[in-house]
Image 1 (cartoon, one colour):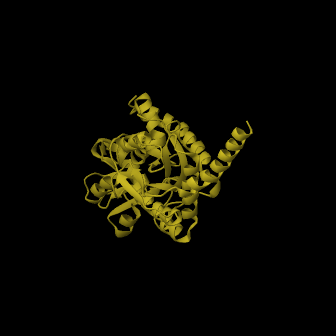
Image 2 (spheres, rainbow, N blue to C red):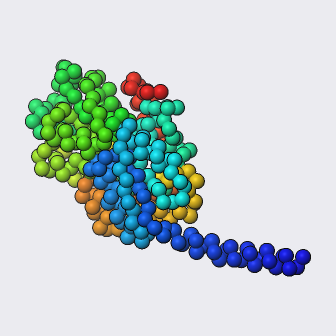
Image 3 (cartoon, helix red, strand yellow):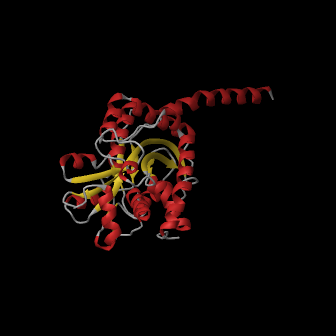
Length: 327
């Protein structure tokens, strides 16, 4: 009996010694990160910046796999089904992890709250109303007047049904009291490209991946959908100043892991992301494109889960009221 007790004690001591070492070993190879949109869009741009910073902290490469389609839900579903070993992750956003619930209901092949481990939020991203460069409206009020007069003659693009750009414009046109034809793309990158070439009239999308084209004069921005002006576009009025105060919307990006991913891996990823976001070089790159780094109290697994739940509650009624819900 004493021999058995001694053996058990030795085994427990050995496990207590080995377990931390296994935890510290993660990751010991590159990590695949699914971005559920085409390259060049807002989620892709922000993911690459933050993951580069995380790589320096964690000591391994992050390899991005762009999987577009169905407003980001195709790639997100693949992320939810991935092996929960810490080596396949997902960067989602408002469209994939909030608006999708109201849009697809029971048809959504995953649930943002129950099918993922929530790692941490990366950024908040202000949303603007953009028009092609030769569009006649020079202000948001002029665009609203044109929409009210004959919305059928205007078209707006978006990055796929349920994407942030789609949901934002649903809210915008609903508040205006108009509905224009919508052109769906496989991500905001392709949608922005066609706005630049004048294939449609206006776009409601996140500022970070559009600001370079605004500065180059390829597209014009009429307003920012928040209470305060964007620091990178100080001369652009807010929707409050422009006459549509109820149009308040912002995007966000965050990291998720498949359900069942070990807690020590989730915590290590969250810590690496937080350190990357606090790094002056990474923070400056994000701020230079208009992305907002969340304060520390809004980072981490529980903070992200609570935030996603609140976003689902916020956007589900908007989707239902728009009449485009697919469930």
